Image (cartoon, rainbow, N blue to C red; front, side, top):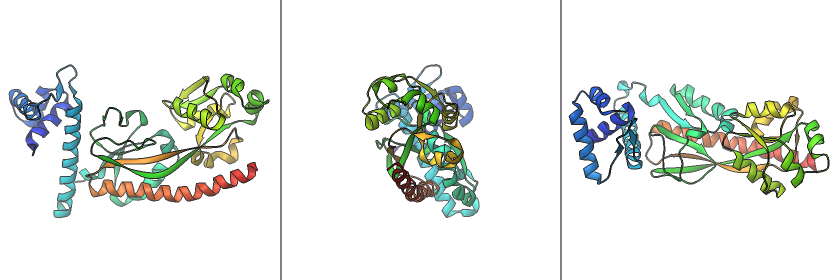
Length: 308
């Protein structure tokens, strides 16, 4: 079993970004900090830190830091059950990763009851900071994250929440100006799209699946669905918008759809060992998505019927 004192020292060095600051935080000498890190590296047979400025953790170091964070959360969870009177609120702070689409429509309403019930404080990281399964890197303090990718990283598992449906929309005037003679390779190569930051591949997938187009396309990128909608409403672009987001503005938006919707699976990734409050969070998300899924199926069926 790994010595918790050594793990604490590693966490302190990484979080304070220095041996000297870690020593001050732990109340020991800098030499003692160095010895503990060397002892842990010797035990594992590989380096845990890159001695640079700033100090960086190796992939193994990051894995150990995540392990230590999970242990601390589980210990606090246990103490809350064993000694409820000692509760100090630490467990009520959870960090999660979420994409801009989910934040724009369903995520916060889904979490409101849990936040009220447990006086929960959330720290939400945007999509670009989410774990990368290819490199197995994960911010150490995340208790879970949303993703369209089902690939997991060490120590985690994923829960299928249902599908997110995207409609490709523009104004009627934009449709007439750029697609008056149909949606084909020439029009798609010249029409201007708008995508979320980092979601060029999603738009390309849509063009390939719905319109059999695999060529290049001009586009602008923005950080939020709200910014996308502004450009689309102004008649400057077309783009993929979450159906759930469009529900709230459809009556006033005056938008038209270009082609059939794109559906992508959504997963909640979380740690196999997690405190009760983190588990409750995942259950709240699943419950909310099941309700949303039933509602959206009716909406999409109605849209299809109107199209026919």
